[in-house]
Image (cartoon, rainbow, N blue to C red; front, side, top):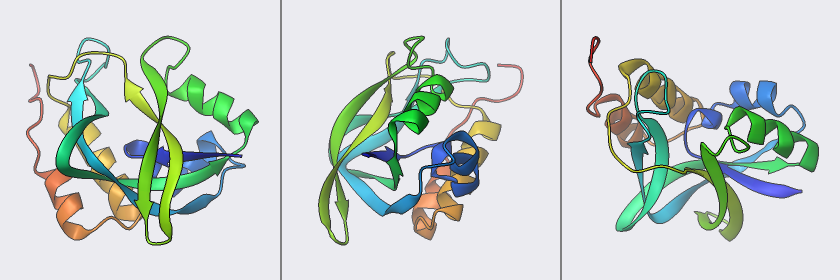
Length: 150
């Protein structure tokens, strides 16, 4: 089984239960020296999409899932991996039990652009459901976003 680290809407355990029903939540952790950002505004329907980039001193909250190969294929389809929207990389995640290796999806596009307010709300709700710290959730809810009509 592969270990997957979700940092966007897949942090929501209910969403993951629908997308990858055989993939139990294993815990939470942090991508250290990475930062949550957005990009590919021409790819997303409502605005820029979540991704992570390396950034010393920053960290991103993640939810870890044990994912069997058949669920991994389903997640790849949801994330547009076959279409080149996201690609997978392996990263080290800090947990209370020590560091683990996991894969994440990163946007295969340039950083930049603003996400929609609806998309940010989905990310913040997912982080909150997963048990992210209050200040992390608040930061998501107060990020700049694309206004209607942009």
